[in-house]
Image (cartoon, rainbow, N blue to C red; front, top):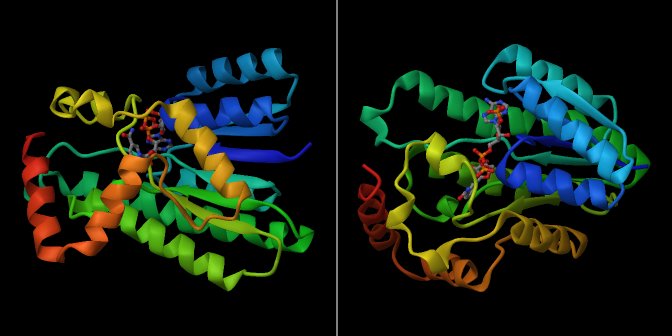
Length: 252
Ligand SMILES: NC(=O)c1ccc[n+]([C@@H]2O[C@H](COP(=O)([O-])OP(=O)(O)OC[C@H]3O[C@@H](n4cnc5c(N)ncnc54)[C@H](OP(=O)(O)O)[C@@H]3O)[C@@H](O)[C@H]2O)c1
């Protein structure tokens, strides 16, 4: 059985990945901070799909948490889904510096180190891959959040080029707005986003898995978000930053 390590596997997009991969027959390594929730999810996947499930309680904003995840990734996984993440409610100067630094650790350092740990084994075996969850926010000026997510996109594209021809694939996944716990956790006002812009996590993951299998480098599920990302590249950067800043103010 192939094994998938999913970070942030207890809620939202990560849980949708875990559900989908378990139903596809992957054994799972589920990572998050809440141990009780991890155990409960593991039990559900074992019972529903007969797959082996390990749980890894780790805080990816800490050195110990990243190191533990790194060790598990280096021990051998066929698919790594770097998904754990969180949002920020406030603008840069209103956000505590510690929260900004945690974001860099979870969104960038953990992604870099887990990818670095997992890829050599995949390349030796000539198969497998990494899905790094970025965001449509990567293509707009959205504070440190957007900055970390464009790093994820650029990093994933660059590693994909480095390993080309090895039978291993690295993809950045850029979701738009998805119904998850993300917005409540970040104290964002979801009502400011029109209904038609919201995506369902299972539908998003189905599109992501399809794109991954087709070898897509940067996956942007859903036609309206493809159009938005296309627009962000077509209009002057100053203009897209101003539009982005205006929409950001709706969350303050
Ligand atoms: N929802 C959206 O609209 C949206 C849009 C674009 C991109 N994304 C991206 O999608 C990814 C998943 O977000 P989501 O919407 O599914 O969020 P979510 O529902 O809040 O789930 C976040 C998951 O990450 C885990 N997590 C958070 N901080 C962690 C840490 N320090 N160490 C380890 N695990 C941690 C959480 O579990 P514990 O609390 O137990 O650790 C949970 O399992 C993120 O990278 C996010 O930036 C989301």
